[in-house]
Amino acid sequence: MKKEELEALTKEFLIRKIKAGKPITTGNINSTYLIEGEQEKKYILQRINKTVFTKPEEVMQNIRRVSRYLERQVLQEGGDPSREVLHPISTLNGTSFVIDENGEYWRMYDCIEGARTYDTIDSPETFYKVGKAFGRFQNRLSEFPIETLHEAIPDFHNTPKRFTDFELAILADKAGRLQAIKGNKNAPLKQAIDYLLSQKEDCRYIVLGKKTGSLPVRVTHNDTKINNVMIDDKTGEAICVIDLDTVGPDSILVDYGDAIRSGCNKAGEEAEHAEDVKMDLELYRAFTQGFMQEVKDLNSKEIEGLVIAPRIITIEQGMRFLTDYLNGDTYFKLKPNQPADFNFTRAINQIQLAKDMKQKEEQMKHIVKEMLQEKELKDDGLER
Ligand code: GN1
Ligand code: MG
Image (cartoon, rainbow, N blue to C red; front, side, top):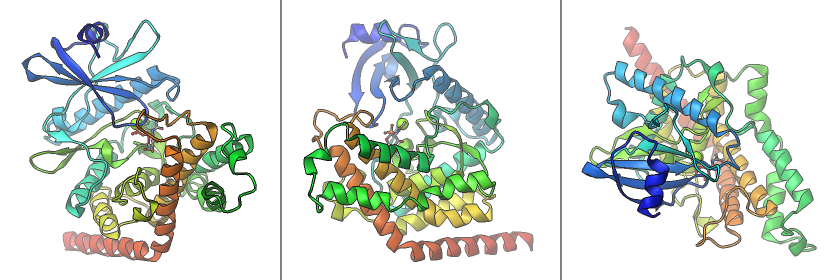
């Protein structure tokens, strides 16, 4: 982006003079730029994707409320909010976004320096810390007035609704991708669809739990992909949970499930060969340990769900990628370097992961049980 363009976009924000800006390509939804300001100060500039977030004002209101609340919590813990909380920058008239002449919404954040995000994590020690970071996020927001939050994208983690959308996409075949394989029963696309359709029953678990009241509704992040956590370059600590776009009310299982989905697959969401995609149990143990050490009030249904939720969210994500492939890639838009069937590849990877999780369900149960015992022993120790 040219300096003049940058200056025009950012002149309303309370920031230093700007020197340069370059795009950051991670993230599937918004457009992000790293901005260099004078005196070595760095900022993040983002254009909000209005097709995905149809009410950007509400998204920003959520983010402001939640980040301020988190700042207060971190202050009370004696921590450093400038490194532990994502800080939206205000504009001259006190809002946290500007609208350009094309009606696009732009916002800015202070850049947390000396820290970065990772698309995949190999080390159980680091993933344990990520588990603690997401657990702390939950704890800090446990008393937040949940009724003040907007639902940025309605039914975001409503898996049965995602299932219906998927069925509709199959029927509509908007991009003609099913027409192209007509009559070929062994086509990988046909097999992927059949597998996901066979998972209908399991898709209901979280929604049903919320309906019956066995799964409490908490403030959730709703996009706990591991690259939404900043890791400190020096200490290796998971210091800050970022990307609060979708923060809202849901079951804790969606956050736990999405973190496991994205973090326990060392090959990553965009692996070239689906055979490389696996559920890593050592990473599962590490994250679960960190998460459970922080979140101390999980009820029995939430604990039971720690085994199945990662698979539900994986199936949900697989359905979302495949729905979009069938619809013609309108949501997860393809970047110039990505092949035309990239969303199909992504869906296949999620399916592979869900199948591997199913096979490892007993081992996952065993790990959760061990974590519980460990916790009980600790609690007993405290009581004595
Ligand atoms: C999107 O913006 P990003 O890349 O963190 C998506 C998530 C998906 C993820 C899959 C608002 O997240 O729900 O899990 O891609 N965000 C939205 O990579 O749809
Ligand atoms: Mg996001």
